[in-house]
Image (tube, rainbow, N blue to C red; front, side):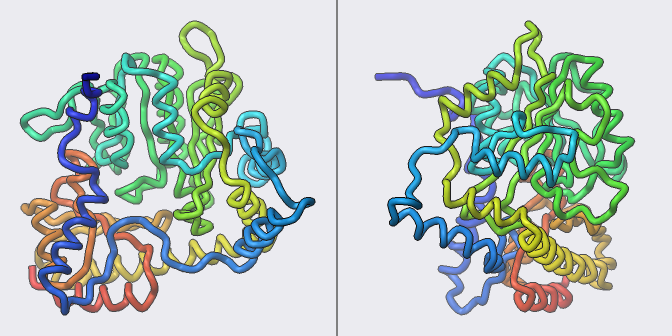
Length: 409
C-alpha cells in the first residue's frame, strides 16, 4: 500500500472552524429548545447587492445562448477584471500582469505553499488564521505538534499581543523565511501601521525573506492613515506576495472569488521569477475562477458595486461596535475582561484572564446560546481569548448582545 502523507498524521484534532461547528451541532441536539446565535465563523450573512447579483444572473442566463456561451477562460483571470482590480485597488503600485484571479484567498494561500516546498522555514503571527500553519504542516514544511501545546515543530511563532500592540518581534525570524502576515488581522482585528509595515519590509529585504501578506479584510479599513496594501510600502515589491478576496466586502464567501498579486521584481534565491512560477501554478494546478463569479467581480468594481460593498462593510462594522460596547459592560469589566476593536476590521478580540478559551466558549454557548470562536484555535498566544465575529443579521447581533450583557462570569 502507498504510505500516507505524514503531514496529515502530524495535524492535531480537526480544523478549528469545523470543530466549532461540531460542538454547536452537539449542543443543539442536546438542547433542542435553544435559540442559538452565531458570532463565530467569519461568514457573511447579508444578501448580495442586487446590482452584483444581477450581473452574475445575466451572465449565467447568457450561457444558454450561442452568443453568450463561454467555456474555459484564462487561468490567470478575465483580462478586464485583472485590469479593473489593478486600477481600483492598486493605482500604479501593481499592474494587471501581476494580478491573478482565483477562487479565494484561502485557496491561494494553500497553492502558494507549493511554490516553496517542504524545505522552507516558516514564521507566523501568533495568533493567526489556521491555514497558514495547517497548510505548512500538510506540505511538510512543519513537523508534529509539540507535546507542551506550544505549536508545531519547525514553525516560528511570533506573539502578537496587547503588550506589543499586536505587531510581532521580528528578531526571532531567521534568514530566508516565509513570513505570514495578515492585516487587518484575523483574529485580533489589529491593523498594521505604515511604520510597522516599513519595518517588516526592510527586515524581509535585508534577510532574504518573503512576506505572504493576507489583505482579505482591507475593505474594512476606515482610518485613511493605515495602508490597505503591502505595496503601498517602499521596497515591498522585492519581498512580498499579497492575497486578497471579494468574500467579505462583496459577500462572496460562497461565490468564491479572490486574487493574488505577485510583483515581477520578486525573485527566488537563484534569481528566477516568482511571478513566472506562480503563473505556472495557476495554469497547471488551477483552471480559472468561475466566469459567472468574475462577472460579479466586475460589477462589484463599477461605481454602483463599490458603493454597495462599502455599505455592506459599514453594516458589519456597526455590528462590531455593538459587540465591543457590550463587552465593555460592567459584568465583563468586573471579571477583568478586556475587549479590542479597532473599527478597521470585522472582529472583536476579548481576553478572559485566567480562563481557557474553550472553557469560555462552552460557558457562552451554554449560558447565552451564542457561538464564538476560541482564541487558542488560532495559536498559543490566543489562549484565554475569544473572537467575536461581526458577521450577522443586526437583529441577531442585538439579541446576542442582550444575552451577553446578562452573563455572569
